Length: 124
Image 1 (cartoon, rainbow, N blue to C red):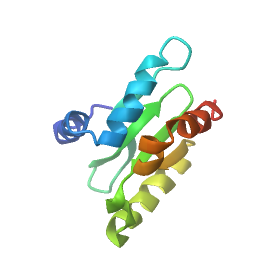
Image 2 (tube, rainbow, N blue to C red):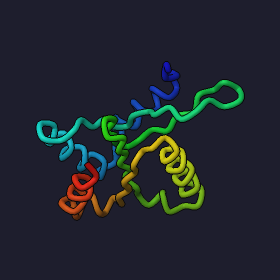
Image 3 (cartoon, one colour):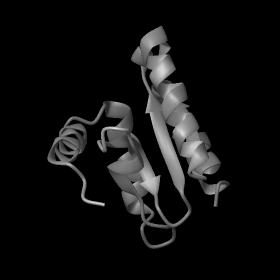
Image 4 (cartoon, one colour):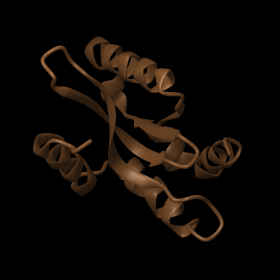
């Protein structure tokens, strides 16, 4: 399936404007390439086509396609009802496609990276 330009641009923008926590985790993920599986950042994932034939995508913060593992990093905005509702919808769609989702708070990534990395490693 060809990813629509608007989705590609949204993913590019997210890659260019990663949060400090996302940047911090990405630095560790990049250094694992020899011993861990390949991860992509801000990757669009096709979910379904709506009745109007418009394809729906979600953009994962980080994904290992081989293991269908998605890592999401949540900041304070994820505490708002609107964003929390979208997160739940996104997670349900990913579960339906057999993805495993790991969620971490910004604070966990920035202040307890070893614990975060251990949880990721245990997912393989």
